[in-house]
Amino acid sequence: MKLVTSKDCQLRVEHTPRPGAPALLLLNPLGVSLDIWDEQLAALSERYELIRFDARGHGKSTIGEHREATIELLANDALAVLEACGVARAHLCGVSLGGMIAMHIAAHAPDCVLKVVLSNTTPYMPPRENWEQRIQTVRAQGVEPLIEGTLGRWFTPEFHQAHPEKVAKVGALLRETSPEGYAACCAAIRDMDQRESIRNITSKTLVIGGTKDAGTTPAMAQLIASSVPEAKLVMLEAAHLTNIERTEDFNAALIEFLEGELAPQPEIA
Image 1 (cartoon, rainbow, N blue to C red):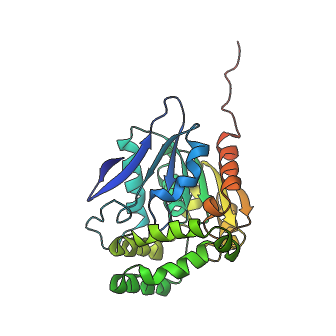
Image 2: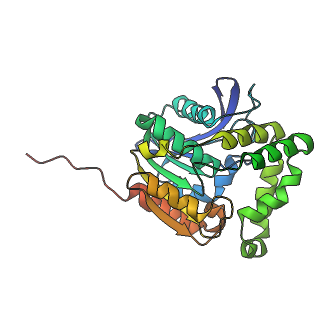
Image 3: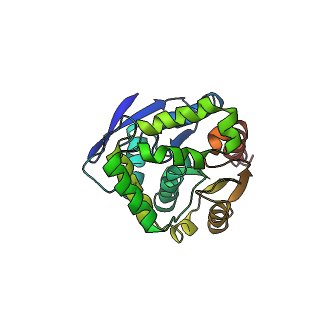
């Protein structure tokens, strides 16, 4: 682990160099730390130079001076992490808020991007009033009042029953999040509208959705897939955290997409 400075905050980063391998930056959902990717490490660590970090105000990263973040600010944090790791271009894989950040990077900093995986996310998430209420709640009472509802949306009832220990782990990650950090990132989602800018994404893109995702719905996944030129869409039988509820299928779809097309071979004279 190391700390990376981005403007006004310090970000906890886990970077696993792997000479000769492409870099893969993993971007987290709202309210949880980099540990949300633990289920992916075994499948990915032998193939990629992995980078994951805690967003500002999450995990062990500081909040900085912004009481309200923007998607642009969070994307700049991610780019600062890549620069600090000495990585010029990387694959991006983001879930939920992480996918929103990945969209912004792909649309506005395409030279930093290899391929993009946008999982259980959306370019636009009204109404504003829902986010205002959530911000007020977390600032007044902390994150605890939100956890039960969040876990109810993030996993299907069947997964809750079959894997209570995995649900409990995610609940623990939510409890560790700074209320101010959570609220700041809620503001970024509240103010976001990337419906037009994602049409400018030129990187090859995979969209992963959950058929039972009540937060970022299948319709939202379809919207992204139809807006980003030539994007591919994979739907998994799961709720919001497909990377945990359907780990093997998620990992397989991710790896197949990232490795599915070989680079053009030079012509033989």
